Length: 284
Ligand code: C2E
Ligand code: CA
Ligand code: CA
Ligand code: CA
Image (cartoon, rainbow, N blue to C red; front, top):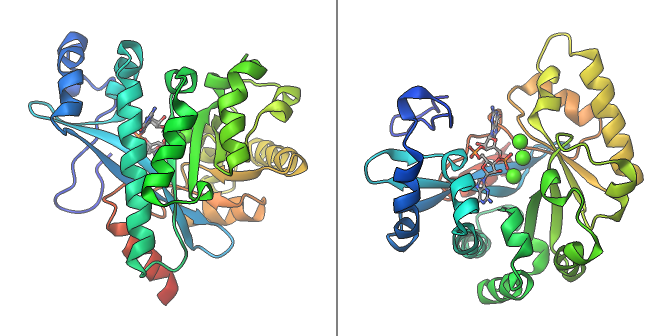
């Protein structure tokens, strides 16, 4: 989809014909790309639904490929995952996002201290130094652990035993917020959810889509209602992805979801924009 603004680019779908690039081509230049500084991060605001204030942003990585232009994460994260590059790349994203959160906080224009969400891949969860490195990154940036939310997909956690969950539990005990990303797509059972060290459910876009229709899809409404009630019973907060319209935002707020993210508020964009967005709600 084409975002607003003249100098914006179009992120192609992983399967779009015109932009499908030979896998081996990308695999070959992936390691050098990190050294060459070809990755950059866009930030998409996370908005408190009750009053529309920006509370933070999710860091979404992009690759400015010298030949192919800007590539979205769906085009290279799976490759980075299978080649092991995801560990250094993920570390870079975390460092960069922490530095950015510090910059937002130093700036003084933002109405509230903004938090930053960073995606963690399954390999990073298995990486032995994850906890130590994360703590060091927070220290270096002078950030309290509560300024960071790590997003882990439901599928990465399915079947994880207590031992495998330990790093996440340690981070959660330190005060890092852990979000269960793409919730609802991984078929985790409810008993399992209880055992996870998570504080937020991030409801996948597939569940919020039906909230756009007029009238809303009654089955989707029931499903979201059920998930929110379950989440609140377990003391979890609910973030919804893919909020594209005001009607959808209102419905999700009324259903009790705490936080929203989506094109209705803002597309992913440069970090400087967070100041403006945070200012804009102070003015309204
Ligand atoms: P995700 O974590 O589910 O991120 C949300 C995706 O939904 C983003 O796609 C975002 O641009 C898109 N999106 C946001 N709002 C809307 C909306 O209102 N409507 C629609 N249709 N889409 C919306 P993006 O940036 O292409 O990222 C795709 C996935 O790549 C992410 O999905 C995440 O799983 C992964 N990813 C991104 N950055 C990183 C990273 O640094 N590390 C790892 N391991 N994975 C990453
Ligand atoms: Ca995410
Ligand atoms: Ca997600
Ligand atoms: Ca999703």
